[in-house]
Length: 420
Ligand code: FNR
Image (cartoon, rainbow, N blue to C red; front, side):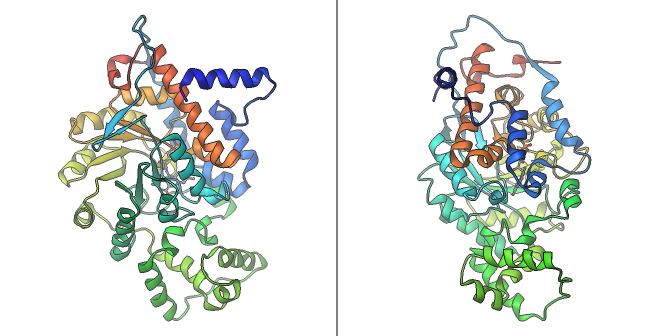
């Protein structure tokens, strides 16, 4: 729906006494979601690393740039479309990969996949999804989707994930580089809560034939030191068993497969030893474009080109990994200058409204990935909540673009901005 129609609809609904269930303002959206979520889910989704300075820096970085609107440019029906990897996309918005969405809503990734399809917005399936990539793909028709990969300790598993992504219609692989181990996430640590230990966010693994075979081997080994059993441990173990996808509750409990899957996952899911040379393995395994997510330094951007990569996502993982890391909008100009149009540069971390998208595109990003806001929409309203958050953002983007004097996103250049 075009911006003015959406805006009119909201005002007319308000006139009839119906106010919005999904606030258009980010702070109110986050607060409303926080009230809806369990304390563990709120900590996991809202929180970041350390003192959360990078979360704040991501926002402050956008405030350091200002738009300088120009007048009388005939800005009726602006064109939001972009070209990316040979495809024309209706808007420059992509949904970032977000793991463990079952913490936000029981429909989880499936609701997001359906919302992306309704809104014609590409989605990136998370390696830590709550619903398998095949199940999500099955509701998306031809809508663009990519698969996000974490480099595990098993190369066979890496290859299997990539093969499955190709088979279910994903049209790019996004390799996330910034999470070779979890950051120091203070809110989660204070609660002593990690969702994966509860068997959440493991759907890509439990649905994978290589993982299942590794699990068979794993279960042959003598059990490692067992955790100290308290009532709470027992409750969480039973929860993980219930969540494991196949077999009756008793079979799953007796076979130890559900808890085995959690232990095996914990021991292989990331690999801090990977280096640039490992990328050749991925390059040989897929013809799909490969994007590197988590690039913040111009030299790493240049290396991505040298190593035959196809795109970059400038990201600090929404401030969840390195507290004190540079904000992405600050990192963007140096990276854009370094790659000199040789590959597309996308950006995430801190995109909250239309002006943020306009600023990122003006500084050279081809597209942006939306993160936490759509998860808050999911928490508040399932599929419809995600659609509403996207619709708010698109309307804000369209109006900000037009009112600042641009007929299309292609017209945005650094000259559209000035430092604050
Ligand atoms: C993430 N992000 C993420 N990234 C990734 O590559 N794989 C993943 O599984 C996840 N999981 C995840 C969970 C949660 C709860 C959050 C908030 C984020 C990072 C995500 O893709 C993106 O980089 C950030 O969300 C961008 O920051 P903002 O805009 O959400 O603050």
